[in-house]
Amino acid sequence: MKNKTQERRESLQQSIRQMMGHTDLPEDVFVKAIEEALRVIALRHYGPEAKVSIDIQLDQEEIRCHVPKKVVDIMKDFSTEIPIEEAQKLDPNVKIGDMLEVEINPDEFGRIQAQLGRQILLGKLREAERELVYNEFEGREGEVVVGYLQRYDKQNAIVDLERTDVLRTEALLPASQIPPSHRYNRGDSLRCLILEVKNTLTGEQIVVSRTHPDLIAMLCEQEVPEVYEGQVRVIAVAREPGYRAKVAVTANEEGIDAVGTCVGVRGSRVQTMVRELKNEKIEFIDWSEDTTIFITNALKPAKQIRKVELNEADMSAIVIVPDDQLSLAIGRRGQNARLAAKLTGWNIDIKSESEAPVSLDTLFKEDIEEETPSENAEEESAEVNVAEVEEETPAEVAVKLSWEENNSDDTVESETTAEPELEPTSEDEGN
Image 1 (cartoon, rainbow, N blue to C red):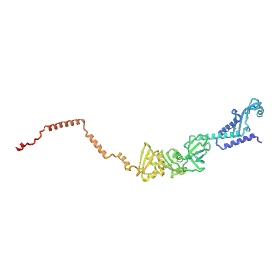
Image 2: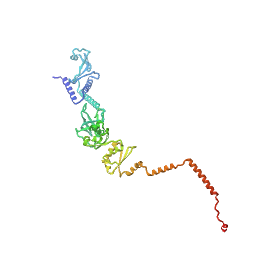
Image 3: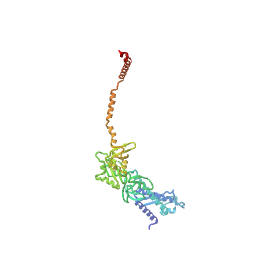
Image 4: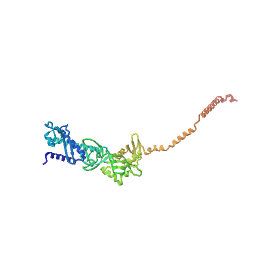
């Protein structure tokens, strides 16, 4: 028959084995947690000054705790002394005054202390798990992880991440990070973007998103080898989560069609991303350093953009399109225009030819006048040149003035000295 001490020791070891079976913590972490829990129990029972030693051998399934006690003739302090009679049962050669390592008897612990020890052990294990999770995911913000929907907590979703190098982890998918049109079922596989990793003692440590624009960029990296290898680069992403997205891409090497590479043969690559995002439409466009061309590409499927006027002071653009392309340029409920503005970073005002404040001939007139000088301008220029050619020198002006003065005096003098004609008198008429 087993005594009570052996039965309780075996019960304790069995409980510990069960705990180890429900966690993926390394053995050294688990052993440390057990030591701290047992030490707390022993110190509460024998006093804070007791020097408790704990020896755990999990391979041999042995857990032993010892407390040093002084051998005395008459015991006055239970926590630090042991009577000679009890001491000689443990060691026949012991003498009064010797220090003896006494194994802790589980019978000495009460029910309350045993429960406290279990709570302490569970708390230490949770702290160790959270520390390992934080160390594994620290610095991984922006990465994509795969998980399975476990449950809903009000409007938020709890995602069970795939087994990592350490242990299985739960992540929080807030309601604000779930596309409005999406509804997931338990067990659904989800690829999420890590938004935040927190080192907290309560709540989920990892916050993930299904609405962040970078999720599409990371999906492109996973599904398009050219993006992963750097031959094609994702410049910008604009999303209305659950409905539509625009992605601007460019090739870093000549001879590569960036858009065609991302779309794939018969749309195979983009369709994989569309299925992952629950049929969210994804459009790839060519990025350009020329803002006018970039805005024109961003407004697709609208075609035949007539003119793009840029105002760099307030980062705004006025786009003139044919009347029959206005609805395509704006999109349903303005969606195409909003995505183009987000993608380019410019405030875009789209107008049709009939809505434009001036006609197209007037819009292009300024450009034509700058390129082709007018006939009047040529005549004015000719007159200026003639005037410059006929301009007189100062010496010529002085001679001219002198001549005019001399001639003027002669004229006046001749006019004053000339005798006026006399009218005939009556006598002359008689003769």
